[in-house]
Length: 366
Image (tube, rainbow, N blue to C red; front, side, top):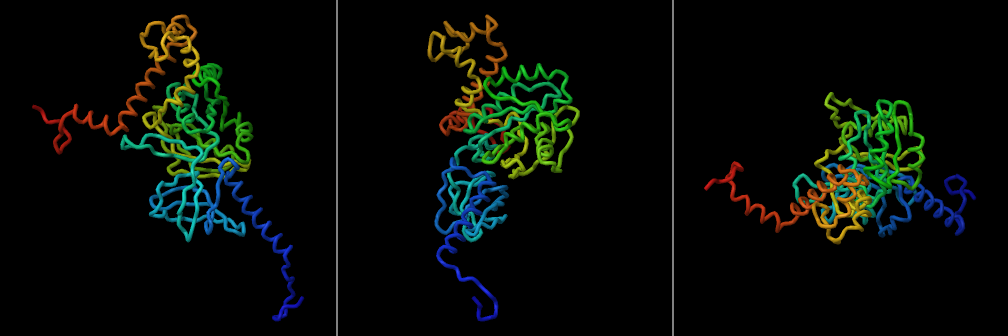
């Protein structure tokens, strides 16, 4: 049929219109799948809103990857609506309207740590399936940090997976593997090297479509190098100083769509003091102690001098390493301390015990 302006055009009948709608819906679904959307997210898109996923948040704005009703993809810097009751983070699914983030959809999992103010909880990343516990073994295994990483991972609601890095520089890989399996029983472990490529293909297979992962590790653990090895990218990396302490190479939280089909959230390295401790995560990480504790005489046994303690008996017999019980005790103390710090009543008692302070922050002496 000839249009009045001289062009030829095909009138859109009902079936053609329906086909166009299906095509647009398929395009939208494909974009969202590449961003990690799964049926588990259970999202219902509000009327008049576009659905997107947060990549980075800076102050009052967030970078969002989203698509419109036609299935076209966009990356936009969006302002946070003043009416939001929750601050979005990397990995959040959000509803957009007129360049604003107006809805943060419920999270099915979230990686958290204590806020620097000592009272609140800071969310690092949301809607995760896999938490990669990235730990270097070139200078020996830091068991204490690995245990706390595992606690954070279990607390997030996602599945922990240990990635031992820098194996090409390790002197005793077998010993590191043995220590790792003892520290996080039941958690899968993969040995990798960004230099030689060891374990990289296995890691790539884990990060398939529908999987959103985050790398949790200290600065200098090799997280960015892993990303480079996975994707052949050239993200900025920095060397580790002589003391073994790394420097931050990643300064903002980012969302990467991987060639393997999965999504990777890259967050800055964190310190031991930043790690979140929760009872559920402790129970999962120290499941071996939990199983032995079933034989304790008292259900509320503290495993610290109690009569009939099966856990202490297991240490004496050599069934359980003494270091394992000692770390469990330290973490239980830390858990109690964190709970008290977040309790207004306990904080008020602590201030009363410590006495009034002067403007310089020093205690007044009687």
